[in-house]
Length: 111
Image 1 (tube, rainbow, N blue to C red):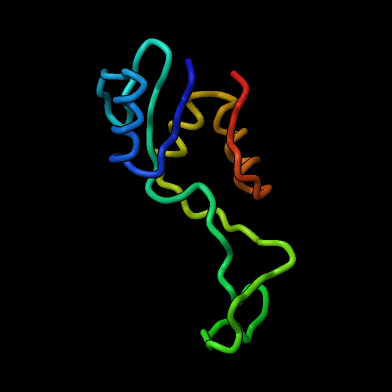
Image 2 (spheres, rainbow, N blue to C red):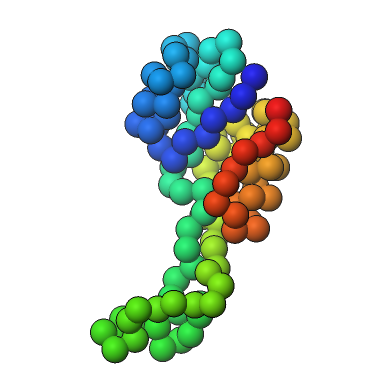
């Protein structure tokens, strides 16, 4: 069984359709091989410009483009539903958390 976590319900529905997953449950759509669930929002977000330098707190044309040496990421607040789904599926949730907090862009848990 593989867990796919989408950014929002509409994206989850599209992914489920492509994967042929049709059994609708509370907070997810499940099938023989996949469970497709969703959070509300991105798994990782770029840090606000002010994190790099206070002068970027207010946008000014002369400061653009803002090109930091290393981009920083924030983990947005997740809903209880998303946390519960991640816990229910064992090590998949922690893998997503590690990838999200370490700023990588690929999330491919081992199953």
